[in-house]
Amino acid sequence: MRRFLERHWYAYAMVLPVVVVIAVLVLYPLAQGVFFTFTNINEANIANPVLDRPATYEGVGFKNYLNVLSGDASYGAFWGTLVRTLIWTFGCVFFHYTIGLGLALLLNRQVKGRTFYRVLLILPWAVPAFISAFAWKYMFNAQYGIINQFLRALGLPDPVWLGQSNWALLAVIVVNVWLGVPFQMVALLGGLQSIPGDLYEAAEVDGATPWQRFVHVTLPGLRSVSSTVILLGIIWTFNMFPVIYLIAGPNPNTRILVTYAFERFFSGASRDYAIASTYGVLILSVLLVFATVYRRALRSQGEVW
Amino acid sequence: MTLDASSLQVVKATDRRLKRAERSKLASFGLHAALITASVIAVFPVFWVLVTSFKPDAKAVETTPKLFNESSLDNYGRILDGEKGDFLAWFGNSVLIALLTTIIAVFLSATTGYAASRFRFPGKRSLMWMFLVVQMFPFAVLIVPLYNILLTLGLQGLSIGLVLVYCTTAVPFCTYMLKGYFDTIPSDIDEAGRVDGLSPFGVFWRLVMPLAKPGLAVTSFYAFLTAWGEVAFASAFLSAADESKTLAVGLQVFVQQNRTEWGHLAAASILVAIPAVIVFYLVQRFLVTGLSSGAVKG
Picture 1 (cartoon, rainbow over the protein chains, first blue to last red):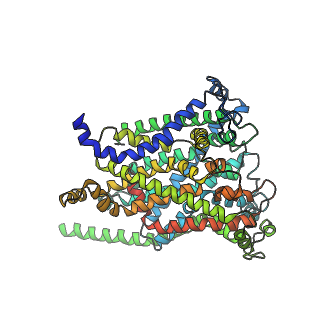
Picture 2: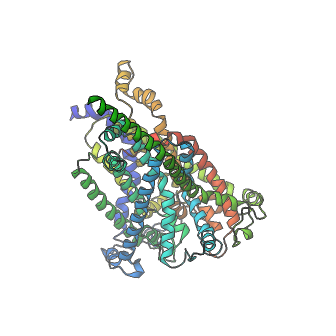
Picture 3: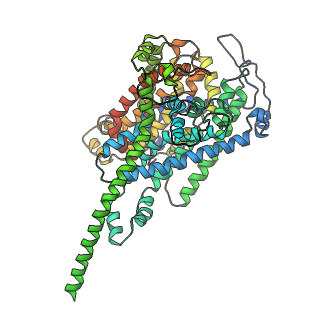
């Protein structure tokens, strides 16, 4: 034990601050959040020192989970919302990655004005997401939005984008793709630049076509970067809140799991904290299962990660 | 025979090179066309907000797009005068919260990132895994308990409470990124420092930290932007009093159900985007190196 401490005390001392912060700010609240899912906590019975009111919520067992998982519409139609969340997540991440990779490949060439293009292309990332959300909400307006003005000028149909239909879901996906491409592009560009040029030369000497070089040199070279950014992208998109909340509001056609949890927490007469927490725990469970499977799949392919 | 073969090869080679040069003209046209299209799509919404910010609210909702329509600086004037809500107070709150979050998160995470990069110690793997898992936390799972804690501590509705809340996401992510960046700094440097008589902490503070500046810049940038643009916690936790709002909350005032003051919203948006874009340009030259070696390699 003494030797153990002697060898590692320094490392532990350096790690300590973050561990303490995470324990206090994340793990303790997490435990409390899980506890709340077994109670009927809401606005009216939470402890409030300002009003000098003690907590009066009670345990209700698994009732919250049963209510949510029954898929009942008054509890957010869980399964339908989950499917919509998956469409939203994979739709967004697919385009984030493919467009990001495409742009990274273009920027990785010797192009005149490369730095200039890069600066312009990263702009959607530099602008705060809530500002972009407002901008797109304006542009998607059915009457005076520039997008419909453009479509009308081309003689195309001009849907009511942000109304009660699936056009709203498409609209928020478009916005989120616009927002998320720069991150993937920058990350993948970094990955591309770390692939040794000799590999391409060797492939060329062997007579590989550009497509073969892409498939057999570029993609394997990007494997570790890709696997991380795709995982991060999926997690972030799954939990993406401001775009949907600010653009579509509480529209059931764009409702995903996190926005519904927020609706339960924040809006409506009865702020139902218990259901909000239940949704939170369910979202976390889905993501944890996904991340574990993902990590295992990577490991079985020999990725040390 | 040998001569024939080699001359043939030479011809072939030049032939191929010629073909390539020819194709590259068309290819470079396509390349620039693609990049220009993408850049226009990337920039247009911001440009359109800028254009709108000079128009009066009534002209911003006309059904024919115009670059200028009775454009003036009036919207900016009214926003800064506080006619449409206490914009300067929102701005100050946002700056304070974002800066505090950045400083605390980067300061805390630097030592841990370094330890995770240089030392092998039991529990390191699970620690790094935990940082990733914390990234996965939907705010929905923490929002109720954090609200409860802030109520208990009497911090509910205050900026400092929000800083604590933002640290929950900023600290793990910064640690993760900085660890990756420290990995790219050769550990020979540490050893050389030790040989020259620096203490272990001296090595970290006086040798490694200065070398890690690009990584620190990117990490700070990230922490700043997360706090600057956060919507959910700010909307839920800040009190309804106008002067305690952050920008992300305050600007929602302009987007009311029936009547949106687009001109004023656009002007306020431009004022908000400017600091973010400035910070962004200060660190953007580090962005590619920092990110690729940081977050991405894990």
